[in-house]
Image 1 (tube, rainbow, N blue to C red):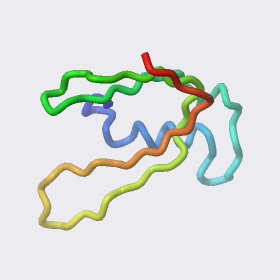
Image 2 (cartoon, rainbow, N blue to C red):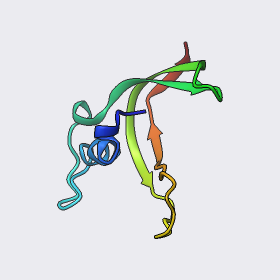
Image 3 (tube, rainbow, N blue to C red):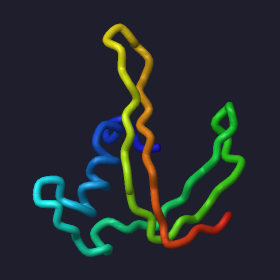
Length: 88
């Protein structure tokens, strides 16, 4: 999860670091592959499981349908591909 100040753009910036949306040119993997950790949280926010992910990159972003009168926060669906992962 990213801080609120980056919440609107972090996935898009990660995705476009792999492929320029205007020219469709691919950059080198060193521009977009990252080593990350993914945490599975319980209902109170405590970490119950962790995965170390190597060579991760943002492959796809999905946005939910938004109703104009809906005040709930929107959650992006972010598909991440990777070279490999291991449970920590």
